[in-house]
Length: 118
Image 1 (cartoon, rainbow, N blue to C red):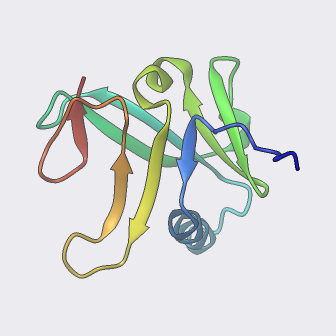
Image 2: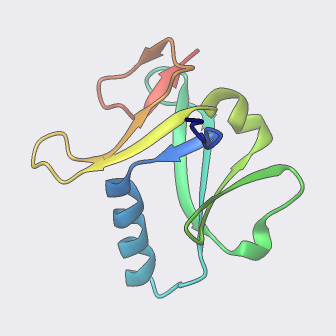
């Protein structure tokens, strides 16, 4: 029997993260908003994760777009060098809850989990 495998997306999301992002998007009243993920200089370990909602019109040639059942996750190619293979998860735990980033490219991460170094 042949197994069909789907190619791995550059930015991966757990079901919990996708569900939470969709709820946040709905509460902001933007049914067509996408999630932009990226990095910037700063944070405890040198680079910080960024996430924000963006209009689909803001997608450029420099962006990679990943589709999750009609919901788009956008990442610029420069950030993708640091984030390729990232798993975005979400937990509603009282301690340590929120979005969690599992980045295979990070050599070090800070205690808060919101920044990393390569």
